[in-house]
Image (cartoon, rainbow, N blue to C red; front, side):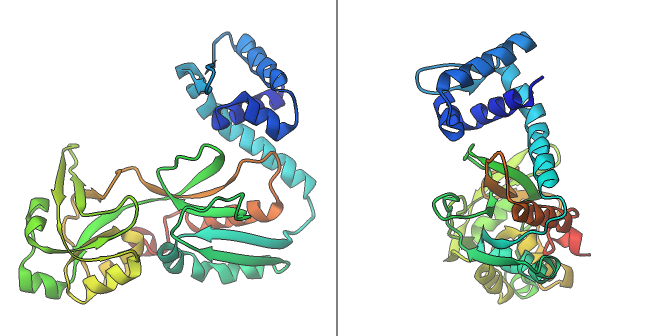
Length: 308
């Protein structure tokens, strides 16, 4: 099978439009439509539903996409590596990443990355905003999901594991909650960011979910500030283990419900490393993505489990 047709199919699912793929490739939309029709004929199954507004994969199309997407990406990577054989990453790598996560889990890794690639300059943009990678000339970004932008290639870097925690001093003063519903009567510290808020959710091993709306004594848009408030005994916070891992290990913070999963949104959230979908990626991007995947293979450095 022609690998270019597979690449066209993957791009069409991501973009949701033959015209968009055609613009990216500088060809007529009819050639994209013919390529997909050829693929469907070879497979004997309809992969995409066409409408005047948008393409959408059929059930069979989504199954096929999930299988071939990684293959297409690896083929592109193999071409890039072959073309760059013997070369070293050069130029300026522009990275966008969340403020607190990067300070706690990425910054200390970057001297090693810089030493490994001395011909590469690094431009680290710390922001909690969702930046447009193309407009802002970002080569690669870290983003907390779920992801909605189908135009981006994404690698799951680390799961978002959260816990409700408080300092021993606070628990001595106010008592330890026995169950999540008890948090309604406690001072709570709330992260004021999109996707976060005062409605906290907890899931047991049997799949049952308990939801509680807490009273926010303090709100802030910064994870590190929230942790410091918790350490000072101001209340209970719900934060990721990659933020509070060190303090949980030392006992400065106590996980209130270690038997439960916790979240403020989805239980399947994760941190992703993303970059624009391109047929050819600079060697500097591959180098950085591979570096992060290696360093996070056992979880983020700030995570309780990976740091022990």
